Length: 589
Ligand code: PEP
Ligand code: MG
Image 1 (cartoon, rainbow, N blue to C red):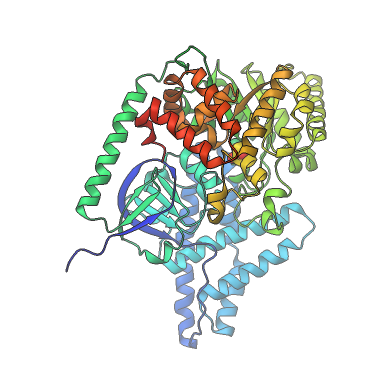
Image 2: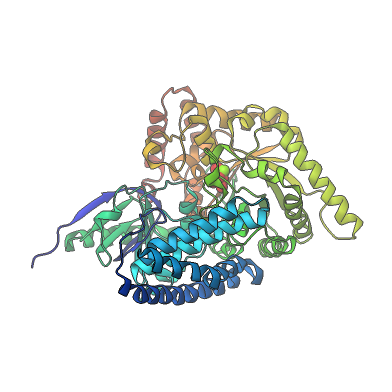
């Protein structure tokens, strides 16, 4: 038999690296549940299948729980406790049994229906805690169904050798539980550069391609593929020539990476001597190791959502504190910016509250949620304040500000927390610096009024682009309209920087635009003084900074501001990089 035909799929590369290996298909939560009739004699076999899937599920949950508590400390793994309780609920399982026997439908169908009924009943409850248990039921149901349908297809326990996971989508709660050691790379049908799964994949240094429409049904378990997380390619049944080509590409990139490592401890300073503050974004405390290894000076964005995603209910003040204190100490003497809760949009535990909102990105998200749930918010603020005793440069940042009043209300709560801690004799930094994310156009436009209230602005381009252009940041169908160089976006960035300068407030960028090599000169030219990027991107961004002159960057920005067309600005940005650092284009498709 000849070689199976080579097939190429082009998606969006969101986390670099070339890997080659076997495919493992991950059943998606949205896949249809099989539904067929049984004969009475089939019932015992169906129940055996369920028992086996439950045993498998229990083992998987115990393993994930062990890993999460290793990474985050004991209590953080409590979400999985709740899942284990579902697996062990005898009343629930008896109901499934009765229904299989009485209705004579297959176990997947009955299990799904009974679990969904339980979830729906819980969703009707007044009590927040009980409503959230519906999420646990749906999460664990999905896992059990996956085990039932795939015969141990769950990659967390089932993989014998590291493989390339192909999925429709992976929700944040599952990303958080991935065992990096068992996965070579990820390929997903949904998503974009700025989707939360992509951000987490970069934090895990996991080569990833997203936006591979309809790939799932064209692949089978065990297919051999090559995946390139820079160019966004997935090649099925690669010919020997294709394999050689990708090996060559990987080698070339490795050479560049080696060169970048040689100036890891050097400052990020332009050829004409302007030093830029180059920091890193982290998702969880364990990422600090990568931050230090890649030579970032501080943390410009600690996305604190992870604590909520890996937890049943809200984390306690002590859980928050443990995470922040660990990071604050490890990063001394460099600054650490902790962003308060930014749940919502695509950052939600699987099957959670967002499903109840028609427009989660414009809904009850981030600071809106925090101001509505003050006790939860204050627990986080108190924890950050307590951690500030360990690092005088620990800072607080509020996400998704759209109204001035939100800054004022958050500050008022912060002052209340300070008074409470002071009354209890707890140590903290009373001069802690606060700043806001500028990621909603209204915030950029009122930057002159916000500036007197803060010490810094951090532009979240991931959301700023989405909200300015009305382009959903995670929808690959409109990815072509997601244009960071659109004149409206550049105008908002420039306006923010200028407003900040008028009030002595510095402006940084912590969205993915800062990590894209050809956008770095543009941002610096617009007056941005601080960049925060995934640890993985720190060396390449530093290299760009060290190979340009600030005067080049300013000339680029001035020219860019005159263009009505974002595509022309993009071409100008790429031209400058091609002139100054052509090799780096290879790392930035
Ligand atoms: C952003 O919006 O650019 C940002 C950094 O925040 P997040 O990606 O977490 O929404
Ligand atoms: Mg954002």
